[in-house]
Amino acid sequence: MYVIQETDKPNWIFRIANIICLKENQIILPITGEKTLSSKNAKKLAQKTKKILDKTASKRIVISEKIKEQKEYVNFLHTYSFQISQGKWLMEVLTCPILEKILEKKGKKKAETRNFYFSK
Image (tube, rainbow, N blue to C red; front, side, top):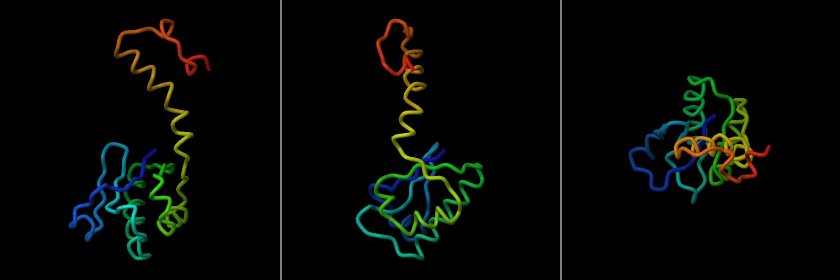
């Protein structure tokens, strides 16, 4: 599963050439949230996103709130049959494993901590 988000300050070269950055499980688009994308740019970015996700065989994605406002881009992702998951669902799924890793790194046991996520 990949997270698609916008960049804070895109480099002008990245913005003109529509270069997408990939960091671990994040796809960072060279846009800001202030203005809407033209249909031509939205289509190019969606095609580039599709190429990245096809190489990793991923069909589920989470998109940021500002990217959700780019309706044409989201529509292109839907036409490529990607499942857009809610960020809240992802948080619920990943909370328990993350807490377990933190406790493991600190050398503590689950029994010594009080957390409602471990009681599920």
